[in-house]
Every structure is written in C-alpha cells, then in structure tokens.
Image (cartoon, rainbow, N blue to C red; front, side, top):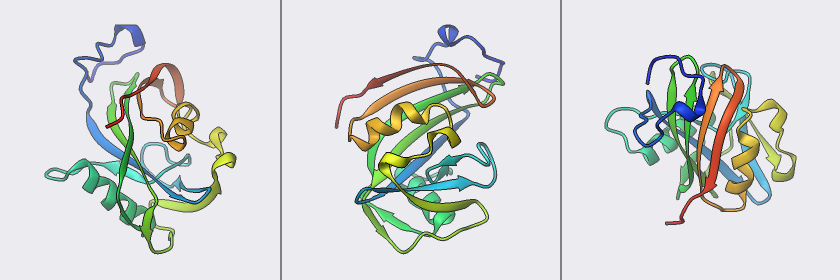
Length: 169
C-alpha cells in the first residue's frame, strides 16, 4: 500500500502487505528491560527496543539477533515471539513488526551510532517518550500474553488501532 491512507476502517487488513518487515527485541533481566533512545531513522529521538529491517535471505529471528548486536552490542538467544504488529502510516509507508523478548544475552549494552541503550525497571517504562502504541502492547508482552495489533499513524500521531490477544504457540 503506497497511497496515502487516513481511514482505519478502509484498510483491508486481510490483504494488507507491508513495505518493510521488521523486528523489535526486548531484553529482560529480572525486573529490568533494556530500552534504547533511537538516534536515527524512523522514530529517531524516541525510546524503543532494539530492532530494524529484515534483510533478504535472513529469517525474522536472525534479523532480531543481528539488529540487537548492531544497535547495542549484545548477543541474544532464545528469542520468544511476543506478538505481531502491523503499522500503516498515512503517507503510505507500512511495516510488519515481529516483537520478541529474551532473557538470554551475553555482554554489556554499548552505545552505537544507532542507539543509546539503558536499563529501566518494568514498572517505570517511559511511555510518554515512546511511540503511542507501545503503552498498549508492552504490558501484554511483559505479562507473557501474545498479541496481534494493527495501527494507523499520521506522522507521530496514533489515529486508530485494534489490539487483541493472539493464540500462544
């Protein structure tokens, strides 16, 4: 879908395809979660988890591992799928995001040209500095409840959404 879109109800989500397939990886350490302040690209300046675009020939899990290594210097393993998010932007851009979490990691987070990582207690996540959708599905992820979400944004503004629990695998 590359034409401007501003009506959530008009989107045929069953036939919808994204411009990009992406990942988000949330590294959990006890009661803490690793977040990043994104330095460039879509969402620059916002807080999120490490992640990015899937490359040709790469599995979505491999993408999550690679992006986490590139953005924060951690080696992660045992990625658990938390949910699927589909984002349609009013300007025509779209992305299909696989959200993972893991408690398996090696190393210490490092700052890179893409991200400034930091640990935060799960009950102190700074939702006001994140994408507007995060406050709806991150609590589900932390509760280990699978989710499936569809979101329409106009720039940084959340226009409308649907979010529901998904079947566990």
